[in-house]
Image 1 (tube, rainbow, N blue to C red):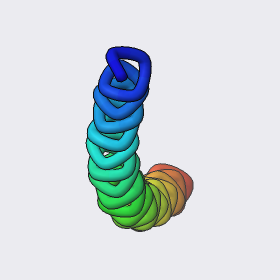
Image 2: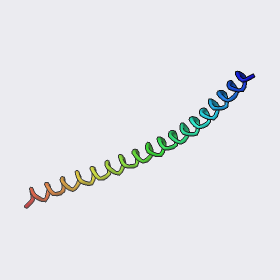
Image 3: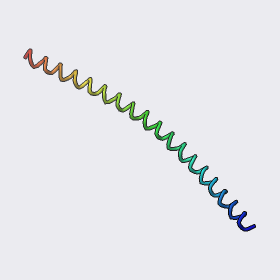
Image 4: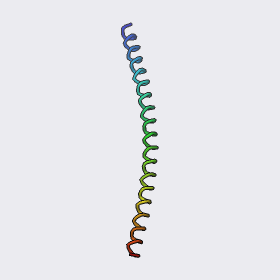
Length: 67
């Protein structure tokens, strides 16, 4: 009988661990999605800043040549 009780406790512990792991996995997936979106946004902002900077450099070179 003790073996059955021990097995039940072991199974209960494993199920609790499984539930905890599933919750952690879901939280990590959500965080990954959030960070992926943030990365995409930052890359877009970086690209826009790069384009503006390149445009300013081109205009400055143009002004330099006309001066």
